[in-house]
Length: 350
Image 1 (tube, rainbow, N blue to C red):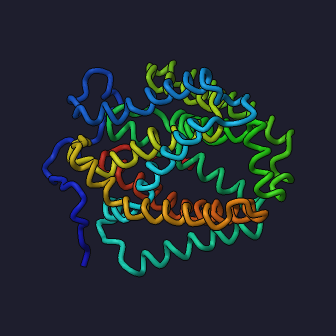
Image 2 (image 1 turned 60 degrees about the vertical axis):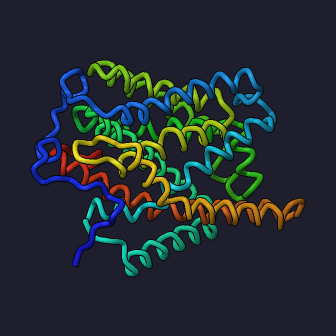
């Protein structure tokens, strides 16, 4: 028998906003007024990205800096920590997409998938790293497209444009910071085996390819009248090019991706988000946050100054990336179910 998670907002079957297809033209003045919380959620990321870019340039934490100042490390660490809970509430996404609770069989499959992904990253780091990066680009990009549609009613028209937009939105915060010289050298230091994949030629090709993709997406969005979408994408590109790679991704992860995803899970009928629901949804992932901080702190104490710290860092990254694989699969299913309930098509390659 199916069960509904008590944290989920209830949705009335008679609510016209959830049972009728969403008009692609909504969001240009004709859509119903959204809750103030929706506007805050969608506006927080761009505002904090602008602040981060300015602070990075003035505070010596730009992409060209050879070292990252302590304030930037603190900001990055805090942002990453705040973003952790959003990935620990996949049971809510499962309940919203299939209306069943994540029982022991589902949790077992989730853990096995994460373990298999982590093992693949450890055993074949080069190919597995590329696959995880590709999945991350798609996950972040489609998540942003769907979040904007859910929380504001702005729907990008046409599958090809949505696909290009999603790929650009995911590549800007993931690949642009990673293809910087400092990021490449750091990753290679942690795992020298990645040098075979992260070659200078491959990184230059990826960097210029992403920039061309972003330019194409900006032009397409501006042509269709989605000036805000074009501006936000351009802003993410600036963040990835200007700020220190760690700071750039961390700020994006917490203030943009994680916040918008949490808001989608907390949204009630009509897509409106209430602050109380947002807080409860975030709180549901706090236990995972506590465990993550505790394990990270223990590892820092145990391996400080150790010659094997690079190896253990790679193991830690493999475990984190392994957990993201089932998370990305669950959210892809959630996106399809959510868009179907709204009478629109989810972002898909086929």
